[in-house]
Length: 242
Image (cartoon, rainbow, N blue to C red; front, top):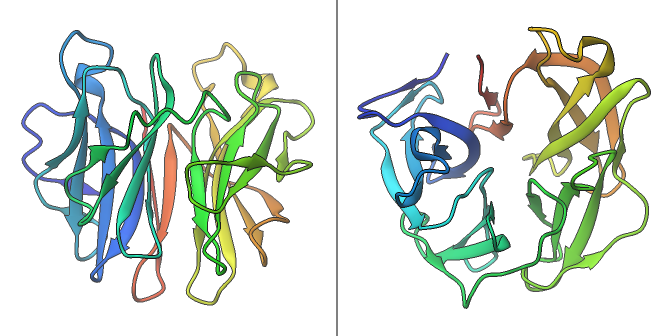
């Protein structure tokens, strides 16, 4: 279980990871102030071992509600934050150091594909993954040259399994060997309305970042989840629990 120090009343949810200078960096939303008439914030924490994290640093704040952030490192070494926000849909913010983010020119990318997950491809294009919000019957993708203007791609990347209610929350990464891994979640219809009705966490693999093979094995049960490959090749999965 991960340990985050000096939370000072913050409730970390919706984590998204990066590896920066050999450290695992997690960004998260403060659930304690979600939907309240106070500034809404995303925080940043870092770890050497993937388990013990330092005190949270404020990374981005705005008046409107935010959930499910995703931070992508760009070809020039800068960072872009993508985050669903009400009432603006999906917005973006930019940072030169990954510590402090500034909203980009209005930042409104449109209300598309719910929870964001993105990959920087070898040709420097950016692929955006998300579910068909609000039904979440499949995970699809869009492609972009600049990371701001996206074009939908045909078909779906991961369909909803038979007998399930939804499939969503794609969190893709490119591994050191050049292949791809995606964490995603589903909910089984047979558990609907029961106390144990929580999202199943699954993995999918890909050799090109476009065609994916879903693994039916259940990694765990919980809230918004993410995966990161540490410098030593270990994989760390972070997710919320009840």
